[in-house]
Length: 309
Ligand SMILES: Cc1cc2nc3c(=O)[nH]c(=O)nc-3n(C[C@H](O)[C@H](O)[C@H](O)COP(=O)(O)O)c2cc1C
Ligand SMILES: Nc1ncnc2c1ncn2[C@@H]1O[C@H](COP(=O)(O)OP(=O)(O)O)[C@@H](O)[C@H]1O
Image (tube, rainbow, N blue to C red; front, top):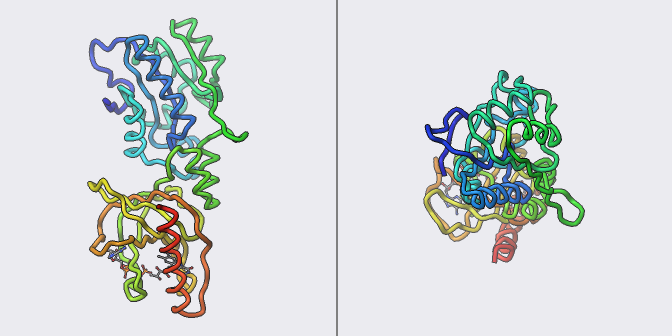
C-alpha cells in the first residue's frame, strides 16, 4: 500500500481510481465493508483503490476541545486499512483552511482533479465539506457533472445496532469490551509506553507494566479486564490481567492502566505495548488491607486464563 500525505501527492501518469472517504476511526465492521467494496470495485474496473482519510480528527479543528476518544491511532489505522488490500492510503492534513473548503470545491479539487475518481464509495450517512453541507445526493449530482459514479454502501448493523465509531466509543467507555469487539470485528486495542509506577506491584507478587497512553486514547472504564498483551516485534501475545483505575486500596489519585503479564518475567520499562481487551472481569474494589487484594488478583489471573483459553 502506498501512503500519501496530502491529496496532491499522486504521481505523474496517475490513472483513474475508486475512492472512499472517511475518518474511519476504529476501522470497524461498517468501515471494513465500505473499504472492501471499494477494493473489489477497483479490481473489477482495473484501477487503483484509494482510501482518503484525515489527520488530525476533523472534530478537533471544527470544534476545538471536542476531540473524541480515538479508537485507532494513525499508524494502527493505516495497518488495518492496508490489511484490507487497499492500494493507496491518502491522509489529508485536516487544517482550518481545509475545513472551510465548500463541498463542491472538495469534490472538484480532491476527487476529480487529483484522484481522478471513476467511482466514489461512501457510507449512506456520509457528510462532507464546509459545515458538513455535502451529502450523498449532492455527491451524486456532482458526479453527473464531473463524470464519476457514486455507490452508497449500506450501513452494517447487528441485532438492531448500527455500528459506528460513536457507538464503539460508548461501549469502551462503559467497559463493555465484548460489545466493542463485536462491532470492531477484533478486540479494542490500547497502545502505550511502559512507565514507572509506585514500584509496589512486585511486592504484591504481581508486577504491573504501567502504560502511558495517547492523550485522546479510548481507555475502557475503570475495572479489571482479561487482555492480550502484544510486544513490538513479537508475534505471540502474552495473556494479561489488566487493572484500570486509581488503585483505591492505596488511595491513589492518578488513573492508571496497568497490566500483569501472565507467565512472564523481565523488564518492560520503555517498551511500547498494545493491549487487546477481551473480557471485563469486575469493577475496582477498595480493600481494607493488602491480603484480600492479593487473593483477589490471584483469582483475576485465573479468570483471565479461562477467558483467553
Ligand atoms: C488483576 C489486577 C487487579 C487489581 N485490582 C485492584 C482492585 O480491585 N483495587 C485496587 O485498589 N487495586 C487493584 N489493582 C491494582 C494494584 O493496587 C496495583 O497493581 C498495585 O498498587 C501496584 O501499583 P504499581 O504498578 O504502581 O506499583 C489490581 C491490579 C491487578 C494487576
Ligand atoms: N509479569 C510481569 N508483568 C508486568 N510487568 C513485569 C512483569 N515481570 C516484570 N515486570 C517488570 O516490572 C515492572 C512493574 O513492576 P512494579 O513493581 O509494578 O513497578 P511499577 O510500579 O514501576 O509499575 C514492569 O514495568 C516490568 O518492567
